[in-house]
Image 1 (cartoon, one colour):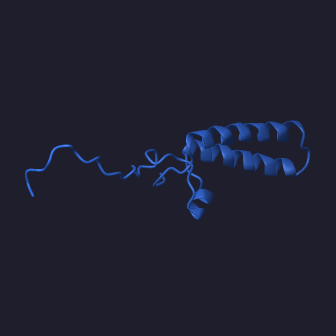
Image 2 (cartoon, helix red, strand yellow):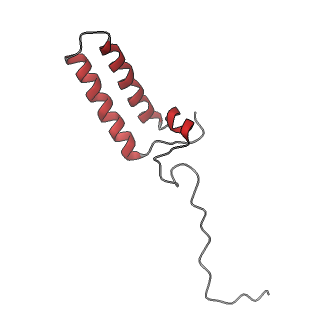
Length: 88
């Protein structure tokens, strides 16, 4: 759906836990229009954790994924071999 994931594993866990906690707090405590705002924020947190993409991260070029998880493998060169090359 989205080109690259930008929400890492630890970030996903934090978003899900915080989203559930916020929704629970809104259900138990808030009795005003603020409860709907809390529900919306909780839904956004859980949704971005599930799809592994955060539009705000994309806007600012941030990512909490490891490089291998984003599809951009680390471009490191292979270590030089001990054998000398026969083609010079």
